[in-house]
Image (cartoon, rainbow, N blue to C red; front, side, top):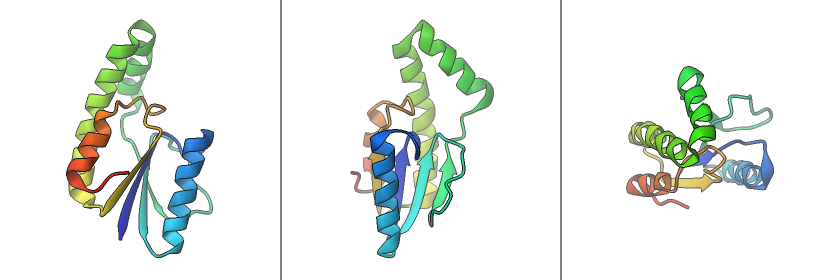
Length: 123
C-alpha cells in the first residue's frame, strides 16, 4: 500500500511529530510511505521517501511578504500554487491513501484536502 503523508514540516509542533510517527508506523507494517513537506531539511533515521514542496525562492518570498500586507490574499495565492502542485503529484504517484497534517503551517487552505480526496481516500 502506498501512503502519501502531507505536512507543513516534519519537525515542528505536535501535528508534525504525530505525522512522522504515523509514517514510521506505516512503514513498519510494510507500507510505502511518501512524505511531502515544505521543509527542505533532511529527515534522518527515516525509511520513507521525502518530497519537498517546490515553491521556494522568489515566489515564496513574495507570498511571505504578501502575508504582512494581506493575510487572506497570501493564503489564497499559496493555496492555488499548492493545488497545482498536488494535482500533478497525485496523478504521478497514485497513492492508495493520503494523510494530511497541519496544512495551515504550510500556508495551504482546506481546499487541499478536497483535492486530495479526488485522488484517494484522505484522512
